[in-house]
Image (tube, rainbow, N blue to C red):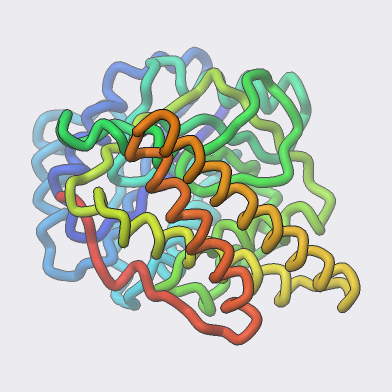
Length: 309
């Protein structure tokens, strides 16, 4: 029997929290003992009402909530890891509070890939679900590019991430407080995992869905998301740099690559009249500028604003 813990950090999203916790009820869990840790970054107690309600309804899994009073996703994620390490669970599976599994074998598939490839990390797909049909273009704008088969990967994020216990025991605390309100802490953590020599695999067979809210559906949001991503990746490589030459090469490579991708997306938007491609172009423009801004520490604190419910 494998013991797996799902970790969810949440902040002022009781509707999303209840949705994701209910989505776990029909999971198929052959030879898996599942428990759930929720870390609330909001001390007002609204999310506790969701937990209390589900427990009264005889929720099928062990469900614990902890309040992290220090604001920011870093404090909340590190709190999740601390509480996980107090258990005897073998692996921690991070998922965001605005997501839910697409298939009932979600956990089983991640475990299956981890066992088959004897890897330390497994990461899978995130499908974007627009909040309304009028913003269906965001599916093109926010598409994350993955492979289509199981493969080794050098980049992963915390929105659908399965990691073995020993990784957190060695890289503890895993998430760097310098990214508290900016995000990109998972990019930095991924770099640390790679530098430590751990094996990571991507599989398309364990996707989750993510609700994309109306409040994010603007060209400004896509530009700023790109900017944050660009400066975050540059800072991550500065913090973990193994030499000035490799760092300079990385920054130049990313700057040129993102600039070229911006031109490509704008050209696609012109020929297809698809707003989604134009928004992706804005993302790459932001990322191009952010690549340089990260050198000087010019941050965009994206997580001072909460989107969705």
